[in-house]
Every structure is written in structure tokens, then in C-alpha cells.
Amino acid sequence: MAESDSGPTSPLDILGKIPARFLEAKHRLNRVVLWAAIVGILAGLVGTGFRMAVHHILQQRQQLAAALADYPILNWLIPSLVAGGMVYASFWLVRRVAPDTAGSGIPQIEGALDNLLPLDWRRVLPVKFFGGMLSIGAGMIAGFEGPTIQIGGAIGKMVAAFVGASSEQAHILIASGAGAGLTSAFNAPIAGILFVTEEVRPKFDSWNLSYRSVMVASITATIVVRLLLGQDGFLKITHFERVPLGTLWMFVILGVGLGIVGYYFNFFLFRSLDWFGQLRGLPYQLLGLLVGSAIGWLGWLYAPLVGSGDESVIWTFNSEAPGAVLLLVFLGRFLLTMICYGSGEIGGIFAPMLALATVFSLGLARVCDGWFPGQLPQPGVFAVAGMGGLVAATVRAPLTAVMLVMELTDNFLVALPILLTCICAAITAHILGGEPVYSVLLKRILDKLERQPPSDRI
Image 1 (cartoon, rainbow, N blue to C red):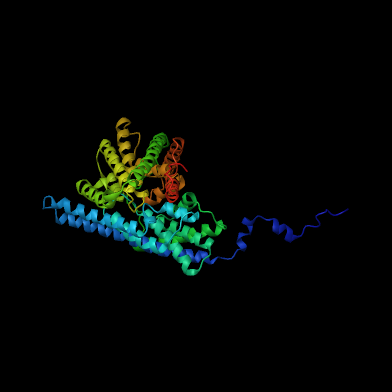
Image 2 (image 1 turned 135 degrees about the vertical axis):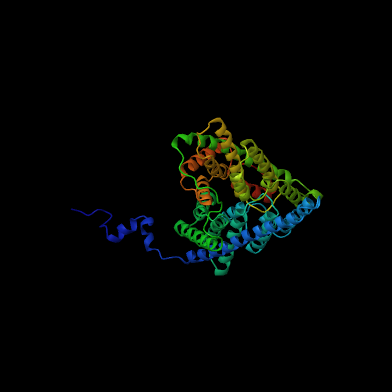
């Protein structure tokens, strides 16, 4: 009987036909993983130092306000001017030294990983650290996570330069640093990993190597953070039990509501950037002083309206204010978030969104509890689920939102209502025609570089 034209099949031929995924065990451990561990350690140290520095400045400002409490006019004028001076100095650093550090920094990292934008770590690291410290320390509505993600990416670029990494290896280290940066901001390692894979979505030649590197960086960053700050969740709130299945319909309504809020959050954020972007002359030069002073005065007047968001979240959970009052606070923080971010401050929008969602969701829960008494045994679960819902609607990364909220609050037993809220919010925002906020922000940066009118569409 004649042999086939292809000849006999040898064991080596069969081995060559096995998919590469089954041969992964043959690959040697790549040194990039070790470099990623170093990036994670450095990102954890710098990120934790950044958080500690901001909290120290906030405490000093509180002590100044307390010392002036018995002096009319001075008790609000001096703290307001101090805050204005800090924001003015932050804006000066950004405009004169590193314009690419304005805003959260996440679009800039995504642009660098897509080879669309440069990443000069020598300028980004000091300006993002000290400028962010001044801006957030002044009470501006901005989160830690934007600066720590861009700082982490810059650290990845720095390590790549020192070890002589290739372009592909440098990209892996930048992505690893970004994941470690989110981890160090929120003490949330799994969310840091998911953030890179779901939101940043970099393209690599070796996905297995890059994925492991991101994991290692997030792990080492977490160890550093927990050694320095402890192992508690970022937000110390009530740990909730599982909700009755009969109440899940309420979380569908919550998700739809937050999808609408998320759509308009992005819409007004872009309009605010447009309005502030057309300022020229003296208003442009004094913008930091004016906005910072206004925020400082509002912080003296009613503290829950300002700040990065974590204190507002705790205040909301501890407050016995009726739902209508919480919804008014939500409207106030919504407007101020648009002003702060639109002005060009250094700071993220994750934390402000978490605060907005908490105030809105708990306010809605208290209103619903009045309409349907006893239907929602734990109204606070609304707030926890709502945090993820608004992030999912604006960023369009529902898995990241779910895990971020569970790690932030140590509430893993309410995964189902969080998942349901997040997917409903993301779908609602998509149906309304909303675009992922960071993708649009990156597109606007590129439009500006090409001297084109900024667009809200990708």
C-alpha cells in the first residue's frame, strides 16, 4: 500500500502542530518579569508617598482653619487664598514644565502605549508628583489614581531606560507601572490588573509575558502599600450581607439611572474642557488662583462639596441626611467636578466619580425606602453598587468597576447586585450614544496636537 504524498508523520511533526499555548511551559522565565517587580515596588513607594504627602497637607490646612476659627473674615479668607496659591503653583508647573501632566494622565499613558504620544519620565515624574500634591492638597475635586497611574507608567519608562529594554519591553513596563499605579492608589491589585487589560488594552507581541508582568507589578505594589498603610480597604465602610433576590430589580433601575448620569457626566466634562480651553489673557493666567480660592472657600463653608472623594464617601455613609439633601449635594459636587477637571487640574476622575455615585445612590435609596418601606433591607448596598455603576457607565470597563468597588470596600458578598448595576449602567450609556471617557480624552489631545477642533467622538 503506497504511503501518502506527504510522507510519514514523525513525532516532531506532530509536536510542531501543537498550538503555542500548550508549549508555554517550555518558555524560560523572562527577565522582564523581574523588571516589572522593581517597577511595582517603586510605584508602590512613590504612590504611597504621594497619598501620605497629600493627607499631610490636608491636615495642615485643617489645623490652619482651626487656628483662625475665632477671627472673622480671616477664618475663611486666609485658607481660601492658601488653597488658591497652591492650585496656581500647580498650574504654573504644568504649563511651564510638563503640559502633558494636566488632567488625570490616563489618556496620556494610553497614547504612549499606542505610540501616539511621547512619555518623558524626567518631566512627568516630578511635575505629576508635586503638582498633584499641591492640587489635591488644596481640596480640588480630583483623585489620587490619575497621578499614580501616570507616575507608575513613567516609572516603568524610567526602569526601561536604565536597563536598556527594547521598545516592546518598555511598553510592557509602562503598562505594568500603570496597573501598579492604580493598585497603589486604591490598594486594589486585581482592579489594577483588570484596568490594564480591559481599559488600557495595550497591544503586545507576547501577551503571556505582558500579562504576567502586569500581575507581578500589581502584587509587589500591593505588598509595599500594605506594609506602609495596613491591609484594610481604601474605604472603611460597613460590610454588607447578600441581598434578597427579590430586590435585584431595584439595582436594574439604579444601573439605568447611573447610565444616564454617566452619559451626561462625560457630556458636561467635555463641554467644560471646551469652555476653559478658550480662555486667554488674564483669566487664563489667574485661573488656578480663582478656582483654587473658590474651592478653598467652599471647603470652609461645607466640606462634603469638595475634596478627592474618599472623605465625602465616608460622610455620606455616616450622615443621616434625608435623600433630598444628598441629591442636592450630588448636584453641587457634579458641578464642581466639571469646573475642577475642566480647568486643567492635575488629578483623576475615578475617585470623584465614586463620591458622586455614593451620594446619588444612597440619596436615591433613601427616597426609594420612603416609597417602598422594607423592600431594601440594606440601603447602603445601593451606594456600593452605585460606585461601580457610574465608573462602568463613564469608563466603559464594567469588570474593572466591579472588582475595584469590591476591593475598595471589602464587600465581596454583594457581587451580584454590583455586577447587575454595572452592566445595566454600561449598556444604558452605550444606548444613549456615550463614548468611553478616556478614549475621547485621548482623541481630544490628538486633535489639539493636530490643531483640529476637539471632538467627542472616537
